[in-house]
Image (cartoon, rainbow, N blue to C red; front, top):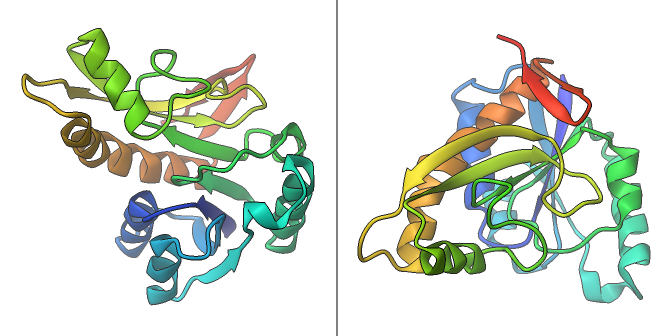
Length: 208
């Protein structure tokens, strides 16, 4: 059974999608064993506690710099014996030592179709604002492995959502979460736990 550690910073809607998928028996071979938050008041911690999942808090401002914070995070992940680390709305930067310690074992969900609308500065509502400003007709979400390149790791799964007339960033964000993120993040985690993802030359292959 693989230990899944979920990193959070906010409300934890993607965490909830993972918890719900786990309860439905969709994540075979893995279990969410710990939720680590970068904020003490993140509602995601409450979601974890309500479901009997251990929690830890590592507040960024408690550490001198990103390197010290990353060292503490790496220590926590090692203590939790993490087999898979999932970014679920984790808004704090870690340095390259963490993803190098867990190569192709850290995944993130990004609210756009990578390589569009990704990289530095593209997070949260900023992504959906940029999508609307560009006038694209289709957007979506991407689950990818985390590397030292922001949003640059191997793509695991993608799902699309329409951009509709009258959309605001908030409306589009909600649609992308409901149609895309809450669907493909649990699916990617399930595939990982079933050993059905392999990476060759930076490209993922899903075994049926």
